[in-house]
Length: 60
Image 1 (cartoon, rainbow, N blue to C red):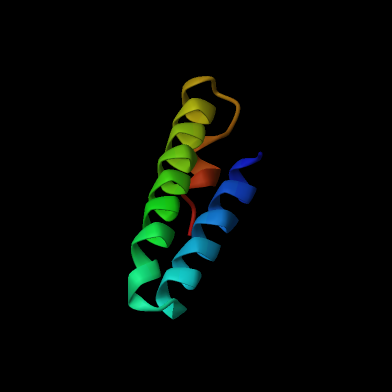
Image 2 (image 1 turned 45 degrees about the horizontal axis):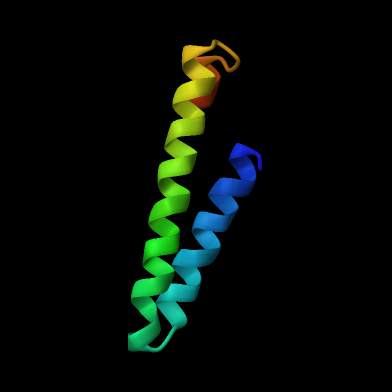
């Protein structure tokens, strides 16, 4: 799974949590948290292995 897919999955879980009934929100937020951690680890790995250019990643 690519970094883009991890971020899209994170967004999907956050949207589902926003629209879910209260009893189901926590499960969506837990899944979103795991996608966030995976995305952060992938991004950190890309930067440490110099696969991605830091300047281009953090441009707005």
